[in-house]
Length: 304
Ligand SMILES: NC(=O)c1ccc[n+]([C@@H]2O[C@H](COP(=O)([O-])OP(=O)(O)OC[C@H]3O[C@@H](n4cnc5c(N)ncnc54)[C@H](OP(=O)(O)O)[C@@H]3O)[C@@H](O)[C@H]2O)c1
Image (cartoon, rainbow, N blue to C red):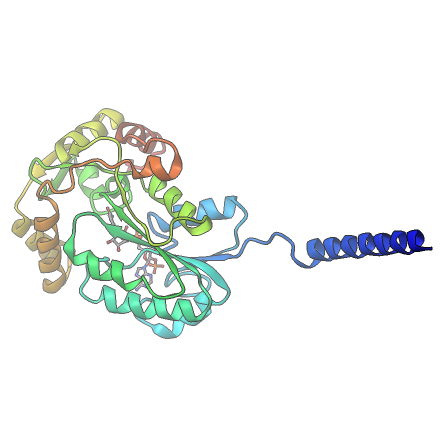
C-alpha cells in the first residue's frame, strides 16, 4: 500500500510537472521584445532596424516620418513610441554635441525607464568633449545604457554631407591632412544590435573605428579608384567651410558657427588612434574603406 501510494504520488507529480512544463511553453513562448529605433530611417538607424527585423525582433522605427511619428522636439510623441519597447537605439538629431542634446536625452531616458525600457544604446561621437553631457544623460537608474562613440562614417561620402563633393569631383572640407579611422555604419549597427539584444554591454562605452586611418585625400583617392572618375580632396579652413554652409546651403548663422567649432575641434588628429572594440564585441575585424568604396560604386551610389 505504501509502495502504491508513493507510486501514485510520483505519477501525480510527473503529471503535474508535465502540465507545468506544457503550460510554461504555452503561456510563455520565446517572444522577442519590441525594440524602438530612433533615427531609424537614417544612416545607422536604418541598418540597426534591418538587422533586428532579420533576427526576428519586432521593431518600431522612430522618426518624424515613421508610422508612429517621433520628434525629439515634441515630447507628446515620445510615449506612443516607447509603448512596450524593452530596448531603444538613440541616434540623436541634429547632433549629439548640440547644446540642447543632454537635457532632451535625459528627459527621454527617464521617460523610457518609467515605461519599462531596460536597455538604451546611444550613438555618440569620438573625441568630443561636447558629447560627454549627452552620454551621461542616458545613464539613468533602472536602465542598462551603452554608449557607442563612433568615428566618421564611410557613408558620409555616399549618403551624407560629402556626397555632393564626390559627385562634383571635389570634396571641399576643413580636415587638413588629418587621419581619421573612418568606420562602416554597418559595423556600428551590428555593435548596436549586440548591445540592444544581449547581456553584458550595460554601462559600457565602446569606441568604434574602422581598421585603417585615412586622410580625406586618401579616402577621395579610394573613391576615385572605385568609380573610375576623378575625385580629389580640397582642404579649406573651418571658418571658410562654415561660411559656405551658411551662404550656399542655407544653414542658420548659429548652426554654421556650431559646425565650424565642431570641425575645428574634431579634425585635429585626436581621433587617429585605432581601437579594437568592433573585434571585442563582434569577434571580427571592421570592414575596410576600400571594400565599402567598391561596393558603393558598384551599387550606383555615385551615379547622377
Ligand atoms: N555622421 C557621422 O559621421 C557621425 C559620427 C559619429 C556620431 N554621429 C552622430 O549620429 C547622429 C545622427 O547623425 P546623422 O547625420 O548620421 O543622421 P542620420 O541618422 O543619417 O539621419 C537623421 C535621422 O534622424 C531623423 N530625424 C531628423 N530630425 C528629427 C527629429 N527632430 N526628431 C526625430 N528624428 C529626427 C531622420 O528621420 P526623419 O527625417 O523622418 O525625422 C533620420 O532618421 C548624430 O547625433 C551625430 O552626432 C554621426
